[in-house]
Length: 210
Image (cartoon, rainbow, N blue to C red; front, side, top):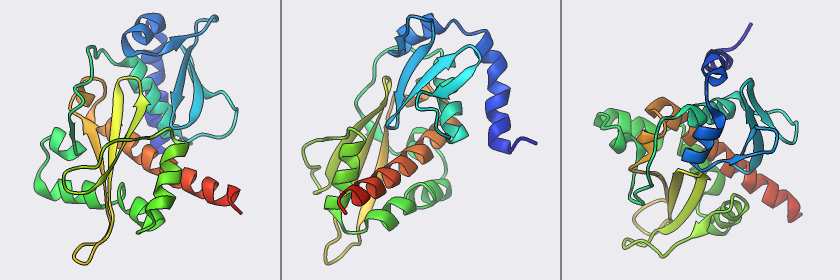
């Protein structure tokens, strides 16, 4: 019996059969391979998207939510360019303050704080493994890292080191244009997958140093 997340993915497959993959890929900035499959680099892994589903190129097990995100992306009717203006996902969705607290300081952020704590060098090593680009520091002293998670969906992470008054704080921000390309629930899946990928990259970097 399929889990809830697996069922979400399975329910998307009939729509994928009807999708003009080449048209979507061209509009969304993805590469079409010689055999008609679409290639995507997502969270440090390569994937093939065909009319029958999403498969990682390396053949290793994959979080089914990552497959769902890629199907949602290729099915997107979004077009246009990114705004390069960033907000928390909850502000983009105009959720209530209670919802912002849950998402901002709950499951999607806590794993990063637990993994990196006040060790900015450890965070930096993980960010580089995911091809993050360090930008100029924010006006309030945060370390800004940009990640091109998908061609039309950049993420920005701001890492605030702890000081005498405040503990370490890590923020994940989305481009204002993101809802044109994915619904809120799918962006939340993407946020969770990105968090997991950063933690995994951190542990891989630590293991390689031993």
